[in-house]
Amino acid sequence: MDTNFKIHPVNRFGGESEAVKRPREIACFSYDDKHEFHLDDRSMQWYYPPELGADLSKGFEQFDKHDDSKDEHIDSLLKTIMAHEEEEGKKIDANVVTWRGMMTKIMAAPFDDRDGFEMNATLYQDCIFIEENHTHKQAQKSEQQRTQQGWRQQFSPEVMTYWGYKFETLSCLPRPWGEMSRDFIENRDKEVVSNKAQYCSVVRTGIGKTTLCLGGEVDAIWDSKPTQKGAPINWIELKTSVEIRDDKTMQNFERKLMKFWIQSFLLGVPKIIVGFRSQQGILTKLEEIPTAQIPETAAKRGVKTWNANTCINFASAFLEWLRNTIDDEGVWRIKRRHRSGIIEVFKVEEVGHGSILTDEFINWRIKL
Ligand code: A3P
Ligand code: MG
Ligand code: MG
Image (cartoon, rainbow, N blue to C red; front, side, top):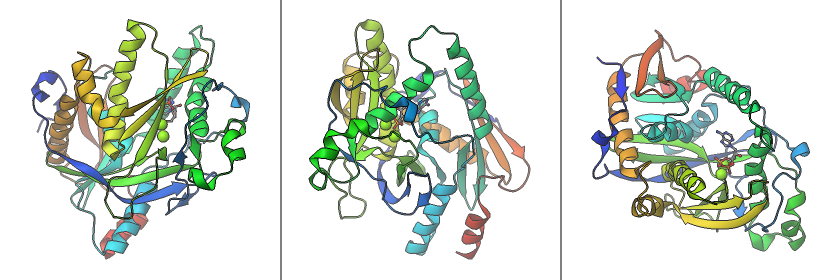
């Protein structure tokens, strides 16, 4: 059995797209403003357009930043799946369970070789559970910080990351617009920015022959959740990007659109709001982009750097191959080195499930 999956040549994955299932939310959870877990939608937010001209750096000194040095594995996802299975009285039917972020890396792999990735995976009851390899992620972050320090930039990487969260704070309300005071809406610029609270949607979706259960953060909702279970939800993804000034910034934006599209496509988020900013971090323009239109718009504009069908067909083929490869107990590593043309899959622990699965989850499944 070959334990390397070849990414190149990517034209093997061209042509018509494999079947995809529309993602349906099966459950959700929230982290509150202390990053404590709750099995409900308390951290869901409503989109309400921000004022243009805002300085996205404002309040950086007060930023209430989540400490990501601790490995959270897929614990919250497992807890939410357990509660859902208890309600339904049966196991979910997914072949693969993971965070949306891991699937984004896989789908983007044919066209993005800048950042390598490492994931841990384990097979349990006919399903592959995948987590990010936290040690690798932390090392990658320190390396990025080290290399960025050399640049003569006006703003530190920390401030530039803050801009994204600040934009969310300026664009969201904790309740629908009708229930908010004018005072709150007009003073969002004075709110302390925090990235501890999150609303996470857990969906069932499918790519080719593989059924997936994915969990991921959604930034906001446009109106309200439909009462009918599984109906599409008007989620909003918020993104910031530097203003397009010339061919180079245009090409960069077109490349970024691939990531925006994949991320939103996987959870069924229909609309992306891009907040364009100046190089100084001033919010200058808003653009609403329907997720479904990104692939055709890119194709029409003659974008050569990526292709949506290729991303889907690549993911479909890789997932099928992965399900044939991870066929035994233990812990497996899924690894793509920086600029490598292959994804390597190999065993790192002979038995058990490492720290990917919690005892609570394993015991729950034995009982079920
Ligand atoms: P922007 O995407 O507007 O830059 P998300 O867009 O996924 O909802 O994430 C919200 C914000 O978190 C991002 O806003 C960015 O500030 C920060 N962020 C997310 N992923 C990041 C990454 N890989 N590196 C640095 N910052 C990141
Ligand atoms: Mg987000
Ligand atoms: Mg966002």
